[in-house]
Amino acid sequence: MELDILFRSCARVNAFCGSPRLITLPKGELIQRCLGSLVNAINLAIAPSAIPNLPNLTIRLTILDDDSDATCLVELQKILNQTPIPSQILRITGRGNRDSLHSNYVYGRDRCPELIYFVEDDYLHAPEALASLLGSYQLLQQQVNGPIILHPCDYPDRYRQPYPSTILLGSDRHWRTILHTTGTFLLHRQTLLDYWENYWAFGDRCVVPGPAEEGTINPIYTQVPCFSPMPSVAIHFQDETTLPPFIRWQNWWNVTEVSNREEQRPIYQF
View 1 (cartoon, helix red, strand yellow):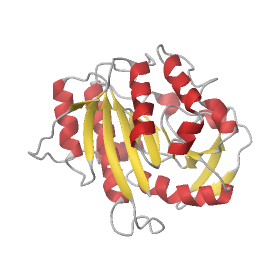
View 2 (cartoon, rainbow, N blue to C red):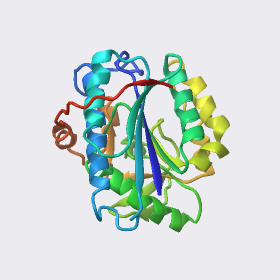
View 3 (cartoon, rainbow, N blue to C red):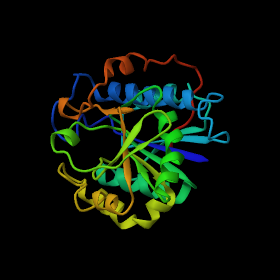
């Protein structure tokens, strides 16, 4: 199995939604913490016997950056140096959320052969997040007998306004079907191609804050089952309304620091 992780970063915009975040800190530091948590999850997932049903796993990590400052990019590179998998930082063509999303999907379409994990820069991952996502992917796909999409976060609004869901057993926890996500999800490249117009329209609608998912990517989930984990393997580090239940996110936050290496690699234009 091949997995490409596409991490969209932008240190110059604190919060696209405009609302205060869970904790007050510069956006660049938040990105570093979230990327650090993802790298920790990658390193756990590629450890021997971490995912028994995926012995031949290849992972690549690409940061698609939207005009972050040089200091932030240097720090992100230091974090990339902490994982042995192939990794790189690319600057997107253009500027803003629309160009970032479009670059994201074009890269996935043109350069990613199999699974793609699209990740926004304000998602903090549990150490076991990637092992759980990949370990559960094949199990859930076999039970559904068709393509699926995975969203890593168990949002609290699903319990305030509940709707019927199918609950299946993954590799280490239960997963439930959902009908809406943000722009962070794991899917197969073929699903991206099959619903290309929906994903492209999602980018077009993300020029300004608002419910861009409605009428663009959310309708996909009536055709392709989308699952989220219970309990969550990631949190959207936005505000208290996005905190998943029963998660002590501070524990995830405290293990995101990584040591620095001297090696530096160039940042290319995409």
